[in-house]
Image 1: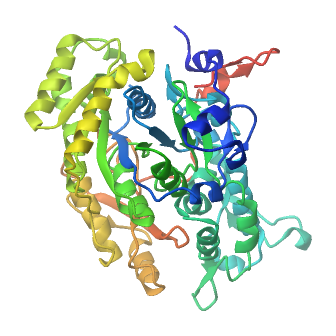
Image 2: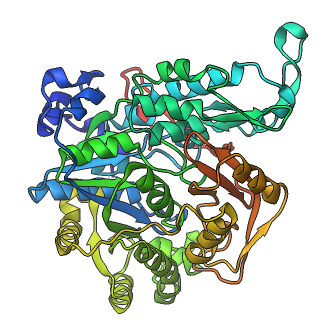
Length: 544
């Protein structure tokens, strides 16, 4: 069986101009990065008519080590829609190098449902992450009262040793000694801004609004006060243009921006999504991790900022993952266990219910694995039928778009029914604490919120400086509805612990830090990097 990287490297990629032709772009409308990648200038998109495409979100259950394949389903669905004669465009986030070399892997799909060139996308791509890291670093270097700095540094790699550091030692020429720390680039507010900006002017405005610390009078100090926004925008001048690549099926794909889904809002850029809606009939996009994080943030943060109206949400699940949510150990997943499927279904059911709360019709996609038995699949289909949710089998990994035709037909049927009536979960006018409580109770099904550490004081300060009427971005483990990653399924009888609430004033939201979530991941005991290498002939192995 070929690995993902072997499939990708064996593929005959179409010239990027051929992909651009499908979107109506001439050679003068694009900026090629080699043979198979291109940047699309904002002016090229602005010259097209207003958006009229239909927006489809791909989300999923809480992830497990068993695998769910959310990106694979998104890619396969886009290819299947194209096979059905629809003008489909795919929108995905850019992968972060930390998870690529750590445990999670890349984010380009799998098998014959991949975005390519996968090795470029999963590594340095067009340099966007370097630009974001550089803009973040520039702001980190500017002088301000060292006692009140809240702005950390950023690097695009997992490194637990950088969570808490001391800088400025070695004499007066090397700065003032103080405690500092790093977060991963995907968790940087610059990345969140990059993903939410509408254009270059909006990008500069948002960058200027970043709060990097507080004055001696406890007033916020912003990047604009330090005259940093112009230079930061300059560093991002090329990165802000969306990246055009292709699926193995030849479907146009925008892969642009990469905020983390469990720390930031976990969606590709608004610029890419809006561009796709101008250019395509159906736009398939994805939000990070399970629907409790990805879909909620997509609906409450990205859709507000981008004035987007999602019309279908595909909720991805696998028999294997549901069995883990039902209590089966990873080593025993190969054994048929109908009871575990029924018990684990509670996780899928809660996500489906949550999607419906936003007025978006859900469609369940069962991503089939070879180890799934017919009885397990039949049990899961019956459970979906009893719940009254539309469901389709999908088998994209070995078949590409051909394995998602049933799902594509179901999505198109749902779009044609036009039942969507999208509404965010909460009004922005609610106090910050009430918005957090609503998410905790209505999406996570918590009994309430416990405010510990600086959280209560943080909220008072944020509301006093004008950050009350903004969305809330929950920083929470992706593995559970709760803030405890060990609680799988659909737990009840728990409370959400909020430790601190921090500003992302440029991004336009505040971040509630729950449980033990960290903004700088560490490498696992056996990182994926150990298996990676490149031959003298340039053949890559171990990348996934």
